[in-house]
Amino acid sequence: MEPTRTPLKILMIAPTPFFADRGTHIRILEEALALRRRGHEVTIATYHIGSDLPESMANGIDVRRIRRLLFWYKKLEAGPDWQKIVLDLMLIRKTFFLARTWKPDIIHGHLHEGALIGWIVKRALFWRKMKLVADFHGSLTKEMVSHDYLGGGFLKAVFGWIERMIDNLGDTAVASSWSNAEEISRIRRRDGVEVALDGARILPPFGAEGRQLAREKYDIPDDAIVAVYTGAFIANKGIKALVAAIRPAVDRDPDLFFVLAGFPRNELEPLLAEHEVRSRVKIISPLPYVELGEILGMSDIAIDPKRDDTGQASGKMLQYMGAGLPIVCFDTENNREYLGDGGTFASDDTPEALAEAIVSLAAERGRWNELGEANRHRAQAFGWDRTGEQLEKIYETALDQNR
Image (cartoon, rainbow, N blue to C red):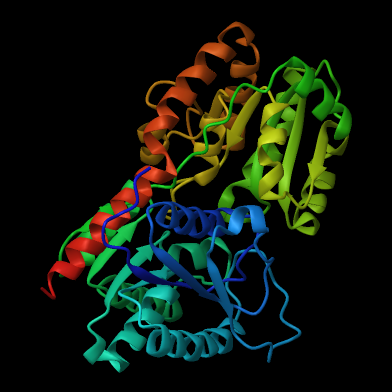
């Protein structure tokens, strides 16, 4: 890929413990890597915790962390926490320092908190004429509700007002899904919202020998139909619906075996015990991003049980497609856009319907390769380099306003 003619300095704000092996962080990392491949400089401002990027993956990305004043805070999983208010205040200070000394062309604020921090820093350094791109990964309020952090009433209304205010920040806005972009477009008084989808890594066919070795490594029955889920074991990713679907699925097809790869494990074990399905499940936790291809390669079908109630895109869907797997999911706008008619869609958003769809796909062994190759082909339209090129155009359009 030819580098851009006008390299930019991009300061990304990641109000999260970057890097952890989950979707939000994969989007931040892969966007940064795609921009680096196009010749741009990228610095990421983030919390004091999170894994350092391996040298083979970092590719010159400079990760700058806040001080470890909240040394006891070690939460890596998604979800709200009141202590994040303190961390975000410290992240404002770190971002201000980097913006003042490094002098970026673009401030790229991830999530609603990152957009707000970027707006504060931009206003404080207004004479620098930096441009702010607000990258919304989903709905702030809906995500808090899905984590059982908000109910109804006054507090939800307050956060709804805050979210609408932040939705209007930034010289331009980016959304990770079609449904979220549509929602923000109705709120935003400025220019419209660009949809910059998550990307897929296209993986070559794994091969019978590699599949067997991987199954031996993870102690997976060689003759089982392996249904895989990768991602966070938390409510708003649909994990409760998936676990509830396992018992009716294995009762109808005893050859089914489920691999659940992600974290936090302590959230998952009680669910499996409650539904009495532990013997038909292999937990792989944590799930290193670098090992994702191996886990997908040893699987037969993939499951994405996320409902369309947070406005989030599904990075895992694209990883499944890039690995050439047939996929079971709920019938949502985003899933239809990704899969077309190539998915196996549950008839409604209940565990019973999800189980029925899993069993149906498991019985169509002769179509697995056809569906998987169709998904791999469609995934090529959702590569990360395409996202990087799109972001580059968004930056240039914003900067043209200064010229």
